[in-house]
Image 1: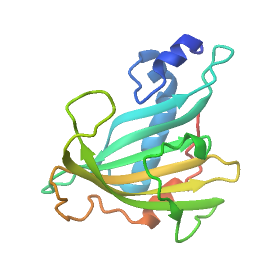
Image 2: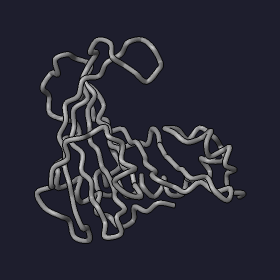
Image 3: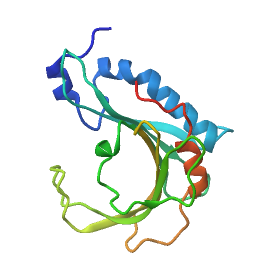
Image 4: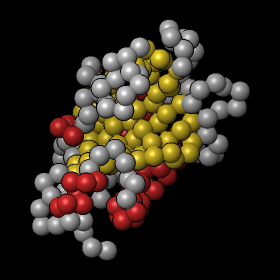
Length: 199
């Protein structure tokens, strides 16, 4: 398969893998990500299913897109539980490619084997919607995104972020426990898996 042209890189960079050619290039790595996350968190394969992916590249030189980060988005459903848990796993070249969605990272309670550093953040962020599709939602609060995320930094500076969240359509949040209710320890175990690599 031919590498992407600089124009294709610029056009496709973002939060989607809608282009068939790009999707084919990333599918093997994304498949590994989903398999690893499922093996750690849902070994009986009852709850998790892949619903999306994201990527970013830059410096489109020599008709190639250097990969900065790649991630998969899985949903966790449970019988009799309202709402859907979200599990996002992303692999990053370094801290500079981690989106600033979570700004309050703190050192994790322990550093998993094979990692150089580990961080955690718990969040409860309002979901706003002004009715415009301009990426600038400053309208009324329509719900909350609550969850916990961990980041494991490797000795080469690359890192894996695992984010477990639950979007609630109630304001204020209804206080129910996060579903799937994963612990920081479980998320760190996933993030420390050496199988998560950029293509």
